[in-house]
Image (cartoon, rainbow, N blue to C red; front, side, top):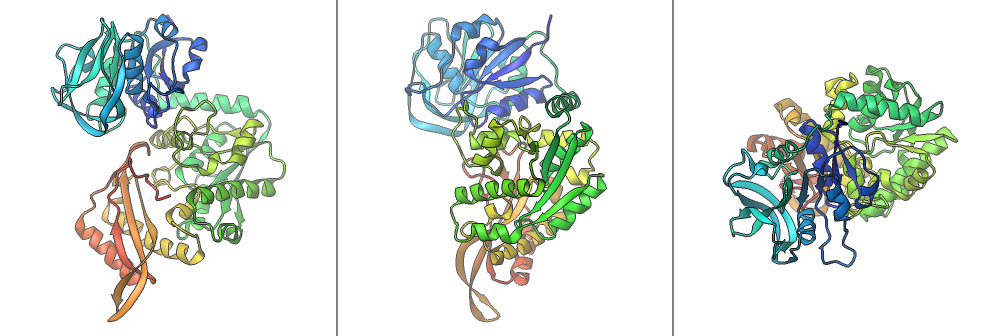
Length: 506
């Protein structure tokens, strides 16, 4: 019997790819598909229907061919929107909730249901919906309720389930166990290991590239470093170019060159900081800044390499899903990523874009970096956004503001490393708040900027929580910044989660 893949049907949830990620964590191969892809699917082992931003009552709500869905004869799990859609298909209906339910809730599973084997009698789950199931079909059974006795888990038929919550996010404390239980109902699922995926990526790169030259932009970050190492492993003709756009952290250019030399990869440096600052002058809208940086970045590339045949990017799945740039995507756009601007999409249509990492999350990329032999101190660096410090500088981007951010950021990061907190944190940085506040320096009135410090923990950048750094450490960091960096007289600590906030300020 052929091994079956776990098919995840995308109805547009910002968490959809997290389902794929969690299934891979459980050791099985999963891939994302659109509802209209059902007719072309082969070797299906189980199916998960994702959540989505639409209401089932919307005129443009995504639908699915339920007869085709059931024809595979495999276990099916509907999540949030997927559960509501299944409820309608099985003769029930859906109505608007009295209030939008967003955040943690208690889930109380029924005893004896295989989906909740080994799950606590009261388990925290994560809700994100504005509709709820009302009437149920004749064959439908309630298998879980919340504390208000509202159904949040349904069984429609043998091995066909729906859950109102998101098991894929870490806020659902036993969500991975629930997914494991569901996967255990399937026969002969295809296994997944990052080493096998690396070999698959190399084969795909070699087939796609052939004898063409690949131009790759590098920033020194985890994504582009792993990308170049992967291209080198695939033995394709690659030129690695470092565009120094003046939006990097303190002394980062020298560090980038040192790191690539350490892993045996030559890079070319293009200095263009004045050009970027000139184009950003007077621009304070975050979307416009991202578009300007993304398009200018590509212009600099093509000016530097001439008529390059393929441009490789270290795009990860969170970039894709937040930009919602796929023509078929049912997701809502959160923000435009620098590698999802119009120029990139045009090159994509021309077949000149290569994005081998586009189905991976950051932690998977780090695992891949380990497989490729990259030193841990390189692939364990904190993520850094493609548009650089521009997204940590709300308002107009100027050299003066960037220098303030660099100095504050360098103090923050060095203090985290000295205290042993750097490796406990997913990402940390300083952000300039475009507001001046009154203070006192040297017995005189000061009127200077405020700096926000942010440190978060995350697994995949799709959700994040703020880090509870020790008060003594925060005090030390704040005192050092306020006593060392000119033009700053206030230091704040950002305690926002994602969602509703994003990790970056812009």
